[in-house]
Image (cartoon, rainbow, N blue to C red; front, side, top):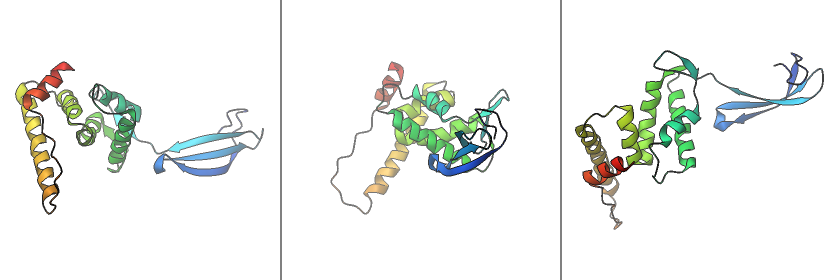
Length: 181
C-alpha cells in the first residue's frame, strides 16, 4: 500500500479491526518513510454485471436509490432502506459468486421489500417485472394475499390470542394507491 502522503510503497500495519459486520477489514497503517499514519479499508470484490455487459462494483447506495422511489409516501425510513440494502448484499454474497447480474440483484430485493412494505413491493415489482396489465397487478396482489393468509393461519394455529387482525386492503385501495404515486 502506497503512503498517501509521501507515496512510499512500504507501510506497516499498526492495528486491524473488522468493520461493516464482517464485510470489510479496517487497517491502521504507518508509513516506514515519513512515519505518518493512514487508514485503509479492505473489502472482498463483488461485482454487478449490467444488462449492457458493463461490470461495476456492488453498491448498497444503488440498491437504496432503486427502492426509494417505490417507497415514496410509505412509512419506510432511511434506516429501513439501509438494512434492506445490507440484507440484499448478504443474500447475494451467500451465493458464493463474485459477479452477479443486475437481474439477480432485483430478484434479491423483492422478498426483503415485500416483508418491509407490500405497497412498495408492488410498485417495485411492477417496474422490475414489467407489469403491462391490471391482471399482472391482480396476480401479484393475489399472491400477497395468499401469503398473508398462510402467515396468519400459521401464527394463529396453536395460539389462542385475541389480537385484532389488520384488514387487508381491497384491490381497489391498492390500485388507487399505486395510481396516486
